[in-house]
Image (cartoon, rainbow, N blue to C red; front, top):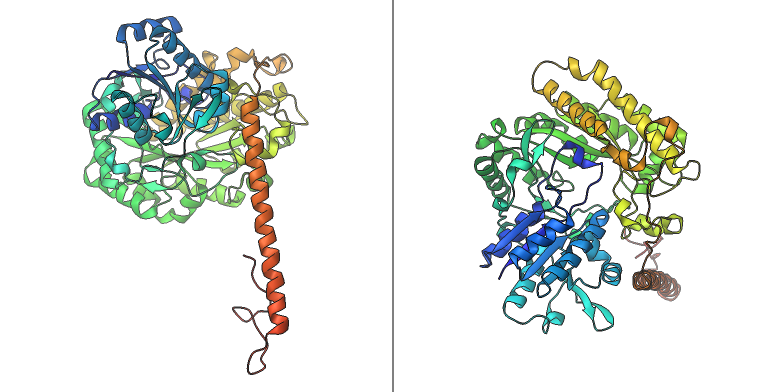
Length: 553
């Protein structure tokens, strides 16, 4: 049973400026497969190696796999579809499999535009993919496909989805196989060290309206901190990893286990060999202010904070549950603990103006994070905020849903003016940092790190890859009215996907109506009971706590 996993050759001018990132999905899937006895697994990193379609075709013909698997976040979906189309042509007897977040929620769209895909894995992949591979290896595919949970496929003239599979309950049972990766190619530019992205927890208890991670991972689960450190120690010793970023949405949610994780790193002397970074929420930093120096001792050197927006109005719209004052205080606390802090701002909603863009810059400069990042709002088509804004979404070319292309057009700005405003913020922030801050921040680790970050920005800017500026034809303010984002206007939502959304919206609306009707009935019955029933001693009937009003259900 020969399995080939392919990471699609998609590039944008966002996170890539800091380096090449190892595809962790491959390690976790392959490790789980190997644990079940499937040992012949090959990996093609088409993204890192910039592998052309022709070379990919030749490689697949050479390998002659039984299964070709590919993953896709939303902007990479068309490239992933092409990978599997090439596979269906080059090795027609192989089963083509798509996984990842986009296919999970948009399977009707994907199968409508890419019918050559045999099956989509919907949700967390390890157990679903293993069940699928076992089915194929035992010769039960496709006869038994309807009995496997977590799949979507074309069945005759119908797009069918089987019932959702449960999430992976024992994350510690997954032993990732990092040996498949070409480690010399995954370098974190600011430090010039090999980088890894291990996983400590999955899921998120928060429901930020612009994010889909909480929908994908569903329930929140945390691994045994010692098991995570075992994995990191192996990455350091076997693959010479010198920097890692925890892949979690918010690794500090479980305070107890995060502290245990740090204690274990310190106990094994790993902070002397490897440093690391995380993404987390402002509220957690504020909560753990007394522990920040301890986190730094454990090797934590970089924290990316989802401050999101300077205007409190936007924070409320995003459902972030944080305040502007808390953002500023969290950044100050991190800087005092000698931890590099990166502030993330989301811009580009329909109410964005030149004034609000200026506000984000002034806020960033007032807060003084070490780094600032302005990300274009990207309306993931499976998030609550997209449902609220979908009538205002004009672009359905998902290859541009990459945080650097202005998908939404603000009422008061053209897309070119929006891009120019963001670039103006970047220019001012990093020019001032380069002249007055970074070179004078001591002579040790802090100075090297900050200058390394500046080098990464400069390298991407010189190559015109930052924010896809070269592709858009942006060369400065003088070109803001002539930029071309090259949207593929032929891309639309499929009828099957639209019907699915409408059915879901109708189902949600009816459920809300039923809940409201039940509340009304409950109140009516309570009033009737109060009117006819008297306490034996003649006392007035009171609600729990002594009040007269009943709480809503």
